[in-house]
Length: 218
Image (cartoon, rainbow, N blue to C red; front, side, top):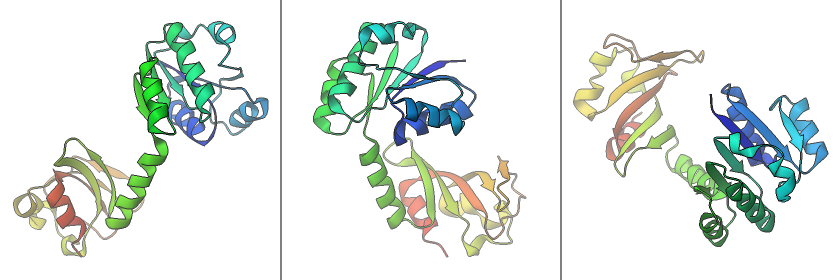
């Protein structure tokens, strides 16, 4: 099991900490605000959190941060974010993932030792725009410029048909690797004789052009 450190418990940091915690990973969340720390504990976002000023190199060194495999710096304030990242780097943290609020901020974080820099607002903006343009395409993971894994609401064209009857692979060069039912149950690697029903969500591996065609089917 890996050990994760999350510094900064705003909306983004809390989400990171909760995702790690719910995945049964070992996570320590820290924030300078006592009320924020108490809130994440009360809300059961994590069960291990501490009040600490991570810009203080001496204070954070007492945590034994070198034992952590990954540290997330989720602070929006630029100066504090840079100081925390620098402290973690100097203390020998193996991998640092830092949130940036601008390209210049991200460039500085990279230069002082952040292994990965992420831009949450930019990512969410793109995601919202994509979902607006592709209303039937619920989510996707892009593996390359053309290849992706996508969730699509089953078109009425496929309702009542088995996967082999729908001829998705033959007609659309796409492979259904999972089906999520309306009751939230999930069928991984469905057989050719699995029936597609109204309300099903199809998890499909395909190319970008085909994904666009499938999500426009009625």
